Image (cartoon, rainbow, N blue to C red; front, side, top):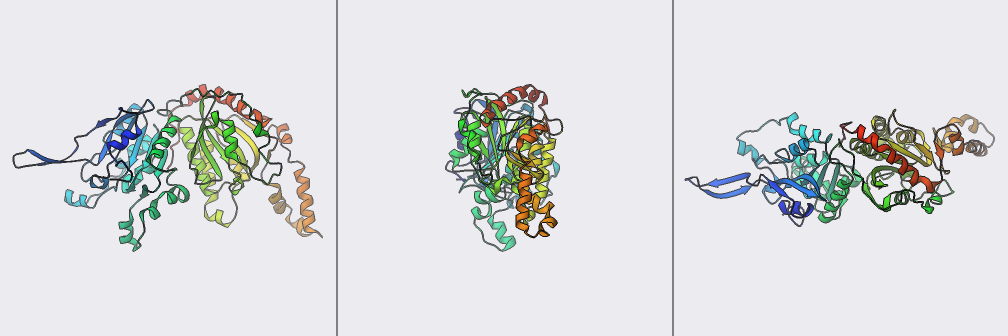
Length: 492
C-alpha cells in the first residue's frame, strides 16, 4: 500500500468524501495486455484515481495517485489532474483536492518512449498556476512524494502532510545517495518535522489520515467555491454583542510580560472556534480562519510568547501568504497587533528578515479586502507598518486601540539608546541619564494622545472588541461582493 492505512486510490477518496457521492472518471484508462487474436488477457489500471465528489454537500473535484500501482508513477499513462480535475475546476469554478502519494517520473519511461525528452515547459504548469487565481486548491501529502507530484502539492492554497507516512522532496533518498553520496531516511529528508517547522514547504501536520481529512474539510468550510464569490455566512448561535470579561485583564500591567494571544482569539470569535494555519512555522505570528457573527474572517495576530511578537523571516513569509489567501478569496482581515518591530540581530539578518518583511508589506499594500485593526499593545517600526498596511491605500483607517496600547517608530528603550547615544556616553552617570531620558519619553507614550491626533478611531474597552469587529465585518459584505474576482496571485 501507499503511505497510509487505506492505500491511495478510490478507498481513500471515499473516506474523505460524503458517503456515496464519489463519481470516478476515466476508470478504464490503463494498459491492456492482449493475445495474438486481440483478446484482452490482462489489465493494469493507471496509477491515478480521480473524479467528482461532495464534501459537506459541496461539489469538488478530487484525485490522487495510487501507490500500489507502479509506486504512483504515470508509467507512460497520461492520467493525472490535467486529464479532468484541473479543467473541471477551472471551467466550473469548484474547489480542487489533491491526495498526493506518488514517486513522480520514472527512468523506465525512457525505455517506454524509446528516447529521452525535453520537458514541455509552460504547458506543464500553466493549469496549476491559473487555478491558484480561481478556486481553492488543497493538497494532502499522504505518502512519499517526489518530482512533479511533490511540486504539484506545493502549488496549493492549503497543504497538509500526514506525520510518519508523508514525505515530500524533489528527489528521494536513492537519488540523494547516488548524487551526494549520503544515506538519509525519508522522514529525515522531507518529513513533517522538516517541512512544517523548518522549511515552511507544507502548511499543516496531520496526526493520521483521519485527522488529515478532518483538516481538509475544515479549511474548505471557510472557503468560497471560487474567487467570484464570498464565503457563505453560517449561523453559529453566538451573540455578536457578547462581552468577554477576561479580555479586561488578559494583557499584563507589566508591559514586558507575555500573554496568550490564542486565548484572546478564542474569546473574540464565534463559539471560540477557529482553524489555525502554519502553527509550527514562523510562530511569532498566528494566522487563523474563523467566523464572527457567522461571517468568515482571517485573523493575523502577534504572538507575544514567541520572540515577543517580533516579525522575522519566517513569520513575514507566513504573513505574506496568509494576506494573499484572504485577498484572493474575499475574506476580511482582523489584525490583533502587539509587535515590537522586525526582529533584530545576526540570526535575523541571516534569515533575510528585511527582504521577507518588506515582501509582507508589499502584499499588505496590494490587498483590497477590508480590515479591522486592533492595537492590543505594541506597534513599532516596520513590523507595525506591515500590520497597518493591510488593505492598501484605499483602505479605511479602521484602527482601534486598547488602553494597553503603545505605538511609535521605535520602542522607547532602544530608541533612547540610539538617538541619545552621545549624550548618554558623555554624562557623568550614563546609566542614570539613560533612565531619565527613557522615563521622559515614556510620559508621552499614552495611547490617548495618539487618539487625540486621530491615529486610531477610538480607544475602546477590550470587552467591546467583538461587537465592534462584527459591526464592521457585516458592513463590509456588499463591498466584498463587488470586489470579488481574480487578484494578486497566491505564491507557494
